Image (cartoon, rainbow, N blue to C red; front, side, top):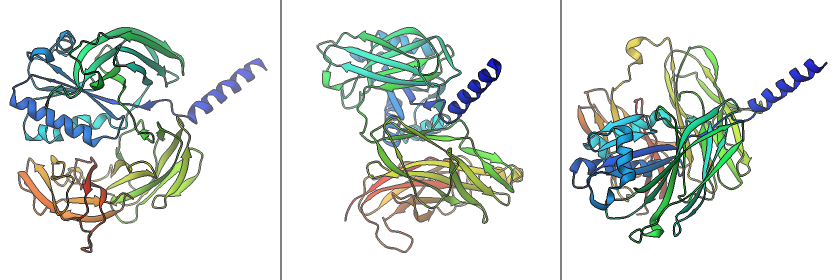
Length: 454
């Protein structure tokens, strides 16, 4: 009887864990190593600015370290240069492991950095972190780390806390002023550790521009989680899932994914969710199910309410027909947030090898310019090879595709196309936020633009 009770208890524990996420969304960290007066470092700074404008709040934290740059250089920066063995600038390190060096147009437009970040987007982390208190006048800071994974143990890994200052000059921002580190160990789901430290705030610092970044980094340099003291919006949602957004599986099946979890990191809010098809073979159906066992047609908005700190789980439920490739996306929306888009692709594994090659290889789409715009804005598609036409698809804030703009035949180098703010029927669209992405290309990132009134 005792053994039966123990078995039942274990089953109940596993069931409870299965009904809740065993992770938390990873906040991606970018570290830029540079030196003043170097042209390629200006390219890198522009690329980092693109990252800040691309991601939703809380998804990305940028830090900068300077060498041979007067009072921008300090022992904390030197230590970080040595930690990664940085030998030339500019160099960017993402999440402690992905390295991008040099400058150039692809760096300045953010394309190379966005490609390096792709593996970390919507990635799960075994940790939750928060900068629970920071006083920029005294330098006192408090950081809390909690385990979100029932089976993970944090054993003598490094917590790093950085003091940073924004807007030191027209180009120097997110500058690291000082660093504190200590080893931490943690085990047991939900258990937490709080670390307190006080930085020395020099008279030359502008206290209103000071902020904190904190991260946990393991022995192989991988950053497990990060957090900052930067203000966050009142209403916010984030997503994480433990599988690739580029799915490869069979044709002629009903495909069910592992759970995708949506985390309400803001105030209590009612959201709507849809799963919308961008392109793909006829006869494919894009549906999804909640982890409560209810399934929904993708195109019909489904409302759900999340309390502050609560999460909801969904999984893809796709009816895959003939061989081919499809692109689709989750759209999460509410009264108080910008539309939150999670892009996916599904390619059947029996697609002939020559068809599995993307229609136009190595394409990247830049941020539109000007942005915001009134009359017309231009998109630049960078290609390393000549190829067939592709399209830039424009979506409204409901996730509906309102027009598709063809590039014409792609030529190696820069290819430019424009949008005048009208839909396929030629009707001028209302002012507001719109989204765009490349269709049938490796660059699956979704970017936003702002159309102003005439």
